[in-house]
Length: 348
Image (tube, rainbow, N blue to C red; front, top):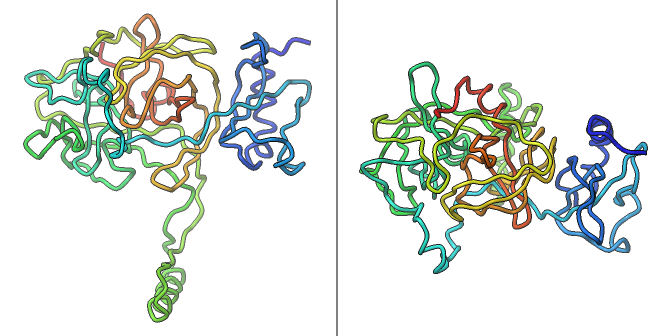
């Protein structure tokens, strides 16, 4: 029996909770099954793992069934997903230095696809220009422009990013707004919880413990986007042109197998292909895990610092916003969700 897309999506959702709780699993999506002969045209529920392990090293309860209600599964080694600011330990290669340098200070005109950051962040990528009415904004990630929820509107945004030599005099914008990343907990507001927290920390200090306690209320803990907007100081200084790609022509919805491209601060111009849709996955932010739902996954086409890049199809339509990845795969917020939640449109 041939599995159709709606069936695969439905079965994935029905089995998500018990699949994602298994040891070594970092996410679940829908895509085409792989065999020893390569990629097939058979739809399957894809279970992404940090590392493929021999069955002998896994408990029976951690093994992924070969079938789920008539739909095949496949275990894919993606590695763990990191939200990528620049890794200060990374060394640039000679080949990277020869291409268009996305790390440079760009003046008098600043294109999309180049290094940018909040003043306290290493560096990420200026994704594209968006508009709300007559007002223009820079679109990138929360963790690039808003320092993972830590920043406040009005904070300086610099180009290039701090790690690429950006200083106060390189300010091109201010943080306008961002959608907070939900890590599944928030500080409790009740007086009783606060008092208990203070008492526990008092005893921790007496006994010279390095541990500190913080009380939390639980929240849904699921995210759709990692996004932020910056308001340019001089809108005429910015251009929607993306080096080696050109000006975005519009937006489009990506499906399995869609060829995609991007220009990012670290790896420059790269190409890939959409390998999974409707991905539910965990992403690490400086040691904290956040769950994302309804994401796109592409083949490995990014590294730390490429976060914030817009991802386009071959017709130069924006399909998503790159925000995390591993050596094997790249995670993308669907652009339709980004634009809807921010109430903006792409500048073409």
